[in-house]
Amino acid sequence: MSPAEQAGTQPELTYEQARDELLTVVQRLESGGVPLDESLRLWERGEELAAACQRWLDGARARVEAARRARTPDEAD
Image (cartoon, rainbow, N blue to C red; front, side, top):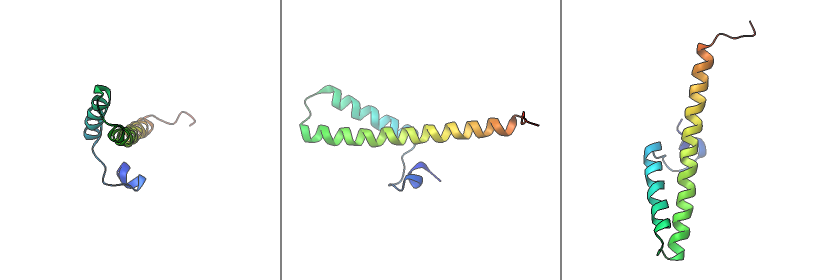
C-alpha cells in the first residue's frame, strides 16, 4: 500500500516527484514577489509535499530495518 493510500489522500507522487515539486515551491517562495494568497497556497502545498516525502522516507526506513532484522539472527536465542 502506498503512503497516499495509507493516508487516504489523492494518488501519491513518487518520492522524486514530491521532492522536485517541493524544491520548485521553495524557490518560488524564496524569490519573493508572490502575492500573499499565492504564497499561502504555495506554503500549504509545500507542507503537503514535505509530508509526502517524509512518509516515503519513513516507509523506506521501515523496509530497511525489516530486511536487517530478517537477515540478523535473533540474539535472544
